[in-house]
Image (tube, rainbow, N blue to C red; front, top):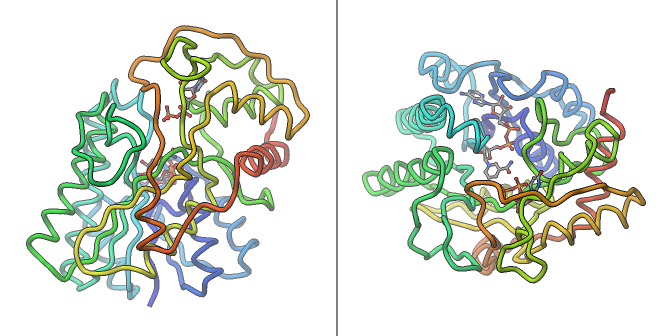
Length: 332
Ligand code: NAD
Ligand code: UDP
């Protein structure tokens, strides 16, 4: 029996594949390569010394997913596949609703038909909207500011309704905070297409000289230094959170924040990156980015209590590993 990892060649999926195999799980990957490269499969096989079955399929294609479930027997599914660019979701909402909702419905439907009960879903801290920090899982969700966030909130509700109707389903909704960093080997990491939207990949590309300077989006937030505060989590900690969710899977729908519980401002982030990697990051302050909140950080007590999981790596490890990956993999 294997675990199906959809989106397993993407940033978080690939690191989770490594963590699963390290714990002795057999893994099958399904990915349509819409935001990843086939070379990641080779890197994963090198890192794990395993041959990993890979299916290049679109998870919204019901026939293709059905055929996959005929060929392989699964004890659980971790569903990472989806689109994630907030700004793009504002400009192309239907693309986001179609891919993120239909992939989740298709997979859950086939799991139901085939009796696969464990289902882990990639949700996001975005679903909290601009609630008061720290965000905890019992909070009533506020509307998010973009279609991407809405797809995550909707998928959570769809899976919740499925559990209402089928009490033996075991669903974990994992709300990620800000995953960054890379596997310490530098073999896999975050490699976004085009100009990065997120802080860490932008900074690593400024560090290589590929981008001239960082724009800091606003220094007039009601935070200690005026810049936005986020809960950055090392992607390997996040990956291990998925293993913990699988091992503690139980009937019902269970929501867990996966973060560190610690908030870091943009200026603190830059200072840490510069100190750890001994590189200057030129930046200038520009107006706020539309849709950003001042604060986002997690109450992590539930994951600790129920999954026996906490993040072990700090921001220094995240900065070191992200830069190591960029140096080994960037092409000019
Ligand atoms: P990613 O884009 O690196 O990985 C997603 C993978 O899914 C890619 O390899 C892509 O090719 C694949 N994919 C997309 N649609 C597909 C489809 N219909 N069929 C098959 N494959 C498909 O993204 P990531 O950062 O690894 O994020 C993984 C999941 O976690 C996403 O659902 C994302 O929304 C969620 N998430 C990410 C973050 C973050 O900051 N990275 C934060 C919160 C939640
Ligand atoms: N940010 C920034 N410049 C950038 C990218 C991000 O100042 O080029 C800030 C952003 O305003 C936020 C923090 O860095 O306060 C994290 O942004 P990111 O896009 O990485 O994550 P998210 O907005 O999803 O929390």
